[in-house]
Length: 252
Picture 1 (cartoon, rainbow, N blue to C red):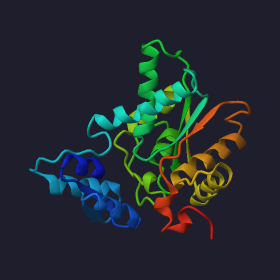
Picture 2: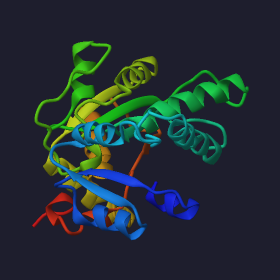
Picture 3: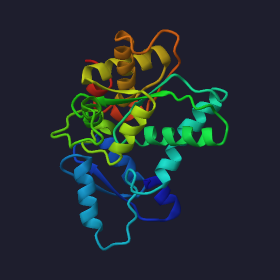
C-alpha cells in the first residue's frame, strides 16, 4: 500500500503494533509513508486508525474494509487451477490471520464452477493459526458460526496475530463448506516448518509459512490427510523480514 501510494502520489498512513520487527517500519518509511507505532495488536491499530482518520478523507484499505483485496486474493485460486490444468488439489493449507486469502480462494472456485471451467469438487480448506492466537480454530472446534475475541494474543508470526478477524464468519463457512478443518500449531512447530522449507526446498519462509508445514505434519500423523492426496501449502511472506528476530525463523 505504501509503495502504490508513492507511485500514485497519494499520502499513506501505516499503523503497526509497536513490537513489530523494525524492518516492517523501515520499509514503509522508505516509500514515504507516515508510520504509526501503536501499543497492542493489529486490532488496536485499527482502532487508532479509525480515531485519527475521523473526519478526514482517508480510504481504509485494511482487511475486508474495501472490495479490492478480496478480488486480488481470489487470483490465488485461479492460479492454482491454471497451473494444475484446471483440476484442483485435495487440500489447501492457508496461514490465517485476517483470512482474506482463504475467503478469496473459495470465491474463485465458485466463480470458476459458474463459468464451467471446473467441476463442483472443492479442495478441503485448512485454516492454520498459532496456538497463542487461534480464534478461528477455537470457533471451528466449538461449532460456532463466529469467532470470539482472543484475549492477550501471543505469537512471533505477526501475520497470525489477529485476535478478532473481521471475516470470521466467511472463513468458518469456507472451511465447513469444503469439509476442511482448522489447526493451531506451536511457535516451535513453526520454526521447524520454516527450517524444512529452507533446507529442503530452498524457500526462506516466514513463520506463517512454516506453520502450514507443521499443520500438514499433524494432519498426516492423525490420518486426516492420506498418502497420495494432492496438497497445496501457502507461504505468505519472506523470512528476510524476520532475520532481525532469529528465533522466529530458526533455532538457536
